[in-house]
Length: 113
Image 1 (cartoon, rainbow, N blue to C red):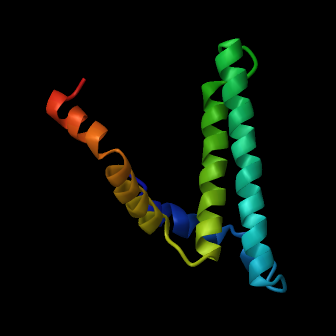
Image 2 (cartoon, rainbow, N blue to C red; image 1 turned 45 degrees about the vertical axis):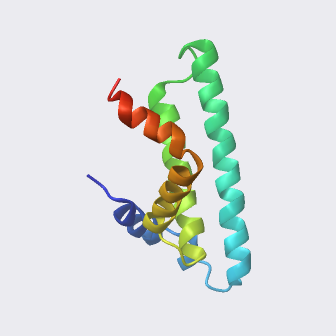
C-alpha cells in the first residue's frame, strides 16, 4: 500500500519544479495551486458526467484518474510550501475531530453500519 509520504516522494520525481529552476519559488507555489484548482474542476466535470449519464460518456476509471491528478497537484503544492501530505492529513483529522466531535461520538456509540 502506498503511503502519503511515498506518493509525495514519487510526485516530486516528476515535478516541474525540477525542470524550471529559474522560476521564483512564489511563482511555482502559485502555479501548483492553480493546477490544483484546474484538476479539481476536471474531477467535478468527470463526476458530473459519470453521475448524470450513468457512465455513458465516462468511466469510473477515468474519474479515478482525474482524482489521481488532484493528488499529484496537491502533493506538488504541499512540497513547494514545505509541507508533507502526512502532516496535512494529520492536521485535517484533528480539525475534523474538533469540529465534529459530537457526530464522531454518536457514530462510535452506534457501531459500524
